[in-house]
Length: 215
Picture 1 (cartoon, rainbow, N blue to C red):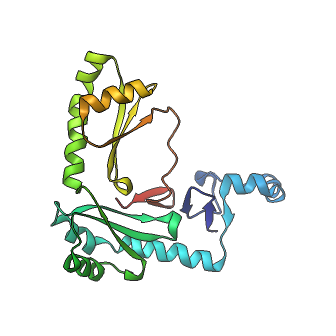
Picture 2 (cartoon, rainbow, N blue to C red):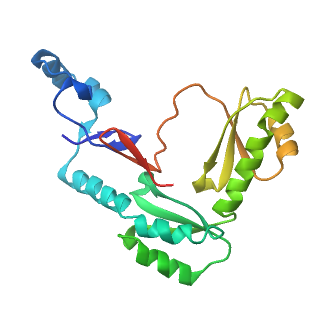
Picture 3 (cartoon, rainbow, N blue to C red):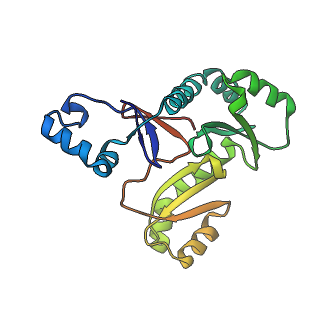
C-alpha cells in the first residue's frame, strides 16, 4: 500500500511485519480499519492511481539529477542551490546568482530529465557566498557567547530564501539586533526549539522511511 502523510511528505507505506511499525494481529488491524481517523494519522491514507503515478514521477525526477549536479558543481560562483518543491506540484527549482544567463539556462534544461517541471530562479548570492556567511557565523559562536551571553544553537543554509538562518536560545528583538551588529551580512534569525523539526515540505521525498534531499 502506498501512503501519504498529510501535509508533511510523500512516502511509501508498508503492509506486513511489525518491523515496519504495523501491527500484524487481526484484531488490531480490524480496529484500525474501523477507526479511519486514527488509521490515517498513524499510517497515512491510500493513494489513488493518479497519485501513485505522481509519486513515481517525482522519484524518477529526483533520481535523475546526476547530470545537473555535475553541471552546477562546475559553476560554484553562479549556482545557489536546487531543490524539489513538493508544495508546488513537485517542481525542480534551480537557483542561480547574478545576472540572467540564457546559455546556462539552456545547459540546465538539457541536464534535467523533466524540463517541463523545471523552474530557474535568480537570487542575490551564490552558494559560495552563502557558505562563506555560514562559516563566518559558525566561527563567531563561542566568541559571541563569551562576550554577550547570547547562545546560538544552530546555523543552517536555506536555499529557497538564499539566506543563512541562525537559531538562538530565547530570541528577543534586542538579541537579534546585537547579533546583526556583531555578524553583519544578511542573516535570518529564529527561535531555538527542542521539538523535532518538521520535514521541510519543499525538499525531501521520503522513500521507505529514508529521506532523500535535493539541496
